View 1 (cartoon, rainbow, N blue to C red):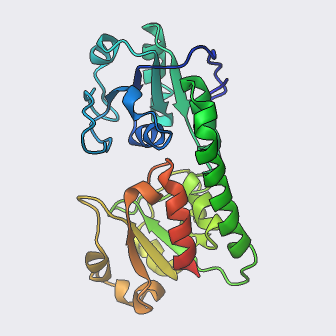
View 2 (view 1 turned 60 degrees about the horizontal axis):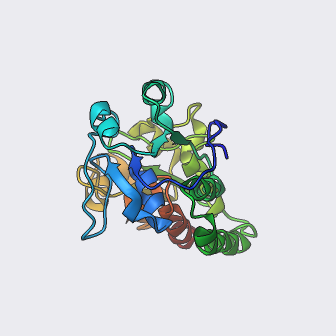
View 3 (view 1 turned 90 degrees about the vertical axis):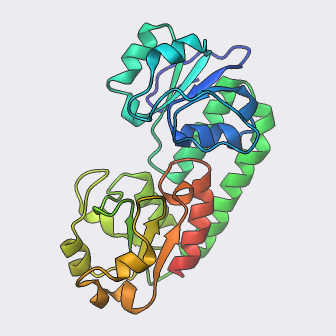
Length: 262
């Protein structure tokens, strides 16, 4: 089996002790029903009540010694970790699966490969088939739409969003919209407020979390009262797990965004 960087990982009896370095990876493990195999997670991962798992530091700055001490047989990492963290982990003899999905379908395909490495492919097959079927049902509705709204998704108050070849760009397109962030030349651009106002999106979606903007604070921004989305009352908040993190929750986000864009 290979990870999202096409790095080969051997298929054996399956991973019993998993350390997750990203919230999205943790979400995927939980969705696959393998939460009992988590031996460590980074500090921002959300765990269900009753599941106590050691924290190994932050998403960007984890404690390598702590990870090694947990004796994992699999470490799940995100694209952020590929350049600098991956060599350090491999140098300690750790098996690492790197996730780097750029589409909703790639998230599901990555979960399928992850389930094979964990050793639960048979058990996970119905879940993955259900996720794929839900994506197909959305596409059956949205592909035929002639009018597509321009959608601005705000990840942070400074204007961070998803650009070309990002999973967010694919998510908005599949949901029947046009991603405003697609005007950028990088995967995760910062779009200025002046640019957003000039492009005049029909829909604005805020990834809501502590420290993010709110619907009320965005509407109150100077000069934003004339934006089409504000005038039409099409400013909405969404859970970050459905739109900001490339985990299983993206399928929920796809369904919600398809309704918003209708």
